[in-house]
Amino acid sequence: MILYKGAMQIFDSYDDEPADTFLPLTDELHCRLYAAEMAGFAEDMDFYRSYLPPACHVLEAACGTARVGGVLAGDGHCVTGIDISLPMLRQARQNHGTALGLAVMDMRRLAFRSRFDAVLIPYNSLNLLADPLDIDSCLAGCRDALRDNGQLLLHLYVPGNQLLQQPGKKVFQFRMFDDPQLGRIIRETLRVYHSELQLLDLEERFRLRPAGGPREDFSQHLTLCAWSARRWLAALTESGFAIDGCHGSFTMATFVTGRDSTLLVAARRR
Image (cartoon, one colour):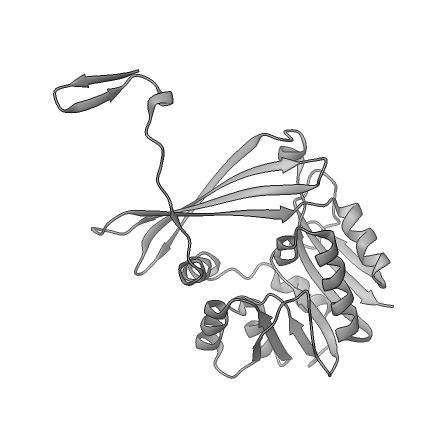
């Protein structure tokens, strides 16, 4: 019920609270927010470094701003990064100059004449392919792009107990980070796990709170692949890979179903 006191509206329950209004998240703003959120994040680098041979030829698929590839190029590897987002690739070039090669390419349709010693798909990017046929196509392309015994290194998301025990229910999380121009950014995630389909509906909300400036809210909706670790490993085996390592954290601990929502997989081309 809404009560009125003069010109002021008074709500007597949250049911009457006005709905939030969110603007659509553009590719350019998403790139800016991603770069701000991931600035300084390097916990996953030990995983990649532990499986890469010295001075090898690396393909980073879905490279985004080339956060991983830029570091590996600095380690002495020859790195090529691909992504379908032009804003991300422009940011990668701005961040890393000519230290690595960059190209617009869909990871479902890799097209290289030369082969790589390793292919990386970092930070849950393979989960963006919700269609199993697209995942099969990506894995087949990765295998074709690798030399014999080349390494495929994946950072995947799998649902943990919080979602597994609440299928169909919305789970809310948030975190805050800062950007010099955008100010304080509140990132909210609302996730719904569909156990029968092994899919995750994800709504990302970004609330921009600049000091002294106008406040704006943006959102995007995604459907992500939310396979179990067992299904991921089976897909890799069926695609012609042998599993060399399966970790549940950046400390390289062994993956435990239910406990871990991070799945780091090292697989070798057979």
